[in-house]
Amino acid sequence: HIDNVIGVIPEKELVNASMLAKEGILEYATQNDKLHEQEPFLKLLSDVFSEIQKQGND
Image (tube, rainbow, N blue to C red):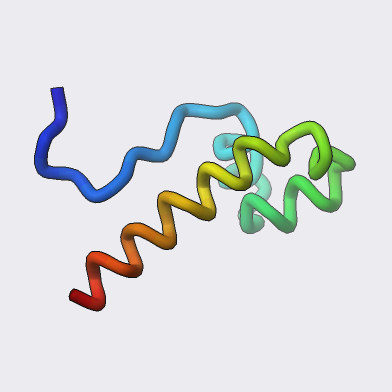
């Protein structure tokens, strides 16, 4: 149980594959025709990173 975190990035093969390719997640998804398929996950990531940024600015 994690109480002291701002956001959690779910384990996802897209994240692992983009890291192995040394590319950003969105860049990797776009280049590999996974953008539409991964749209809900990419929205979740955007929300997590927005919350991290918001917390960092407070």
